[in-house]
Amino acid sequence: MFKNFWHHRELIKQFTVRDVISRYKGSYLGIFWSFLNPLLMLTVYTFVFSEIFKSKWNTGSGSKMEFALIIFAGLSVFSIFSEVTTRSPSLIVSNSNYVKKVVFPLEILPISILGSSIIHAMISIFILISGVFLFLGEFHWTIIYFPIVTIPLLLYATGLGWFLAAIGVYLRDIGQIVGIAVQALQMLSPIFYPVTSIPDYLKPFYAINPFTYIVEDIRNIFIFGMLPNWTGLGFNTLIGIVVLLIGYYCFQKLRGGFADVI
Image 1 (tube, rainbow, N blue to C red):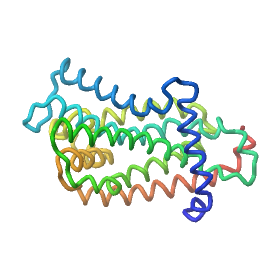
Image 2: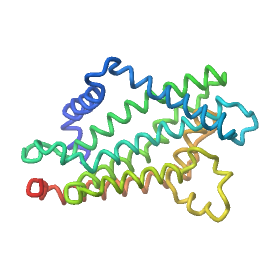
Image 3: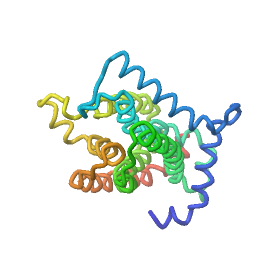
Image 4: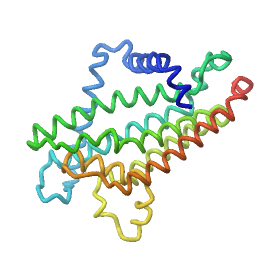
């Protein structure tokens, strides 16, 4: 699998760049929207949660900007998973011209979407680091763990991307189901609220939610200067590898019928 991706690395790069460029093709601001969108999102969440809902985090500071950055940190990484999973069900169908080309590696299509989402997420992360430094006056060395704590997220996104891309060819309604499921998962993950505010009877569910550990680790390394939860990270990585392999297996198993269905 990895040898195959290394062999097609230039093709993956080209498709990733094409996806990023096509998103803003024809717009006046172009790629600048990649910077503007996260800034606008940060502004909106700051106003809604700090001014309207009067929400506070359990850090004791009461800073509205800190609250906004805490939420923004979780959203920045969740956007990678959200974009890959919501776009994957229609990915093969929307690129049907490649299906009948026997030599074309269809499995790189979800990878290119992942690459595109990572580029946009990195812009948000840059804004997050700048915000923590400018508004909170802090810069934590623990940000070096960012590539490590995102490994489970990338594994989940890639594995589910392959699985949903394959299933989406045969079951076109899966895209609508995935959209609702991703929104539900976002609200059921501690992105907009701390883990300490979760009722005791729901904590077992959050304990098995992989995004609980991912979101908490992102906040810890960027905002609080704390080390990741190594136990949760290790367990999440193992499960992510299983999801990756199952997704790849399902994609290769089902791809034989793509041309007949499309």
